[in-house]
Length: 157
Image 1: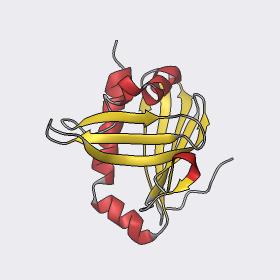
Image 2 (image 1 turned 180 degrees about the vertical axis):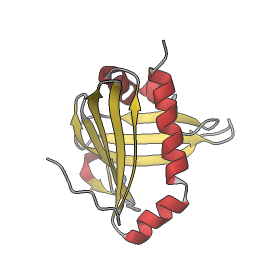
Image 3 (image 1 turned 30 degrees about the vertical axis):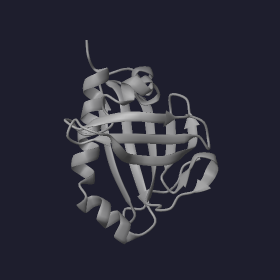
């Protein structure tokens, strides 16, 4: 099932990662690997919960300055299609419970490409103002940076 792209509500990042799809999937699904790329360096990420099942918890924390960790993402997986797609949202938390401050739903897709893996992160928002706010917050720099960090992790010789 594919949802339609809405340029007025969606932001996306895509690139070809010079690594097999299985390596990219592993970096997305292994908490120790995920922590290495999920937030822009030099900030650090801690995975609290990565329950890759529909309704499963997706909870990360961030340390901006190398000190204490604080909240980063509290969400829920909606779909997990091995080696192909993950869909998560911060509109719900574990067990499909409504979140206090819904903001976005992300669809991460992986596909074979002659040079490795075609990777796309599409982030959908409920309103044009939420989309604009996310863009002003630095969506392209932030998501672009972490996609580059993901590529650097899995493209290692």
